[in-house]
Image (cartoon, rainbow, N blue to C red; front, side):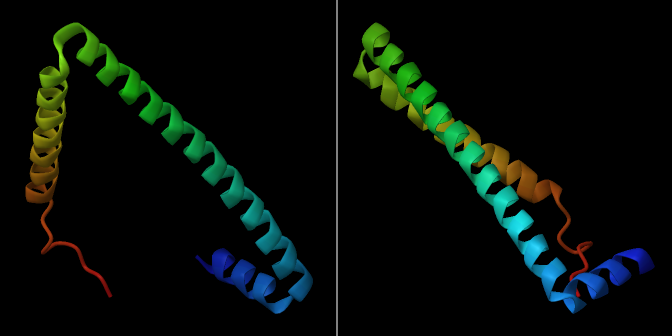
Length: 93
């Protein structure tokens, strides 16, 4: 823990190291954002293809049923996660 504090003190005390650290952090955040955006586009593309396949093979009513079931499943999973976490044990100071 002391080594982390000394690193933070050294970085915040020297403006050149601070600028270099911020530039590196910016590049890393930009790269992560770019990759996550590409992944999100692919996920939405595959969802659209899947829903299009369902619409062609089973009709448009089946698409609404699939979407409704997915929403209900997501709500159920969310409620399970919420109920399984004990918020009293979380100590935020």
